[in-house]
Image 1 (cartoon, rainbow, N blue to C red):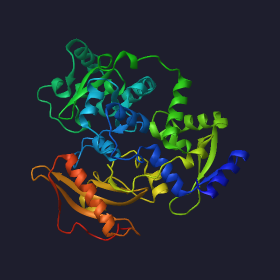
Image 2 (image 1 turned 120 degrees about the horizontal axis):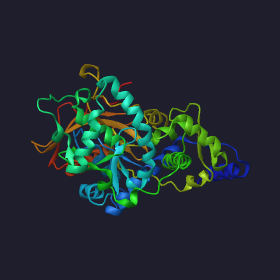
Image 3 (image 1 turned 120 degrees about the vertical axis):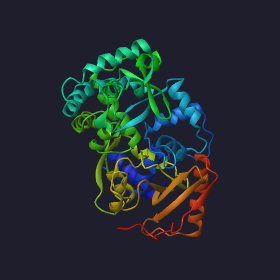
Image 4 (image 1 turned 45 degrees about the vertical axis):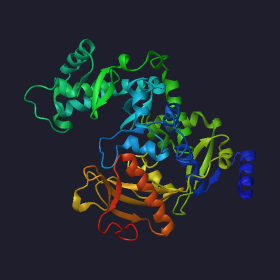
Length: 418
């Protein structure tokens, strides 16, 4: 540990003063908490995969497969020996992972299922009220019918229940039984047993999750404490708003109250932003200075992140810590996009250094690179380009294509636009 940092740590521990955290230290700590500091080539077995997901908290699921589906890429970016078959076994055979909702559809350790029961109860009334506005009165009649169909007839896909003549569309045009399935899933009455061509197969929760994950139930106070405590552990340092947003299980008001009630366990920290501006107040657990010397330097290699990677999920936090402004532009009309439909951030060491637009062309057997942008002050040196090419070769192999192809004009502008 550097001498100045050691001195700062000792002063803070003895006086209870607020800890000033440099931007470099903050990035390193957060990367470590989110599983991006371990050697990416270390052997990862099925038990190790479960530990990884437990440690980072959840892995978002998304249907877009421009290169690879989000959950697979999130895990591959942390360990290149990740095997999809292990994830399928943990979800569909062992029942040690389940799919439900955080801020979006996610894969979550089943050990946390008992805490999600509180979310299910909160969701039940809120969903009915929200959906009534766009489905009208009486749509709930399909809930009991659909539940009984699964209870007596076994697992179903949405298409198994589709009424004859119904025209499919977006969520606003779900058929009544599809609406019922989503309600039953979002409130924990049914679970996703498996996927077929990425389509959800629903069954009763007690038939999907092993009994060991159903009990014991947790009281309200215990639920709030776990949600806030586990979020802060995975963030390293956070505001009460960031604590609430991590799982999206509690409100900012509940997180604020938890912080106030646990002041004795917490230490105030000031986190220096990437732009050199005013440090931002946050909270960390007492003893937090000790992790300064323990957070390892992340691998120097360059890695392609999923647009849904948990490291960058909180866009405001991403910009403060990394000076990297990012949004997914899939819902932005083409002419108004700044970069592209589905553009991937590039992580090098502890910095987000650029972004890349690419697509797996499985018919041609290539990973087609359309455009590359480096961030300001990031040079396209020979070493950096070699690291990028090595990562793209790894991505191509992982996605099952034979080679990387570079389309005309792929180097684009030297730097990202401002």
